[in-house]
Image (cartoon, rainbow, N blue to C red; front, side, top):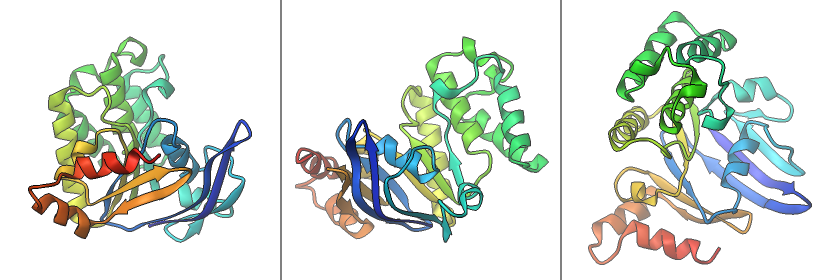
Length: 241
């Protein structure tokens, strides 16, 4: 679903990502973890062409991002960061705008409203985003960003700010989607406790590259060993950052 080879991204003359190689398959729910400043958000932005790259190649569903930008982006659903939401629109207007811009069918709006209900967003549909709390804006960004139901989902710290009930509901929703096997989910997160039972793979970003790549078999082995925890293994990997 996603292939990255030799990716280099510089910020302020410094390489944030340097020679990064990565591959993501359909049906995976990957946690992208790393210490602050290791480039998680930069990598997520690079996948959809929101930051300039100095070297390397990104392919989404076989489409080269540099040469087939629209086709590659159409395969991505990206949760919108709360700070990027327009204050002057209501939540409902935001959803309508996204659906119209992406040319989505009527059924897609129904699915978005169902997700809004699961996340407890329904009472706020006619509230202006500028008057909403961080958690409500986070929910709106999730529902709007995932409206296309594309085969690659990119979630950058999308659980931040959610209340426990909404966070639980969203994790349930992601697990259901991953279980269908036709979607790849990448979640950049500091919440590595998710790896204890939900994630199918965890990748540690370190020194501009994927340093530790813990696949499903290794996750299952760690989970089955009472002397170890996935969280402890990942923290040890990140301490080398």
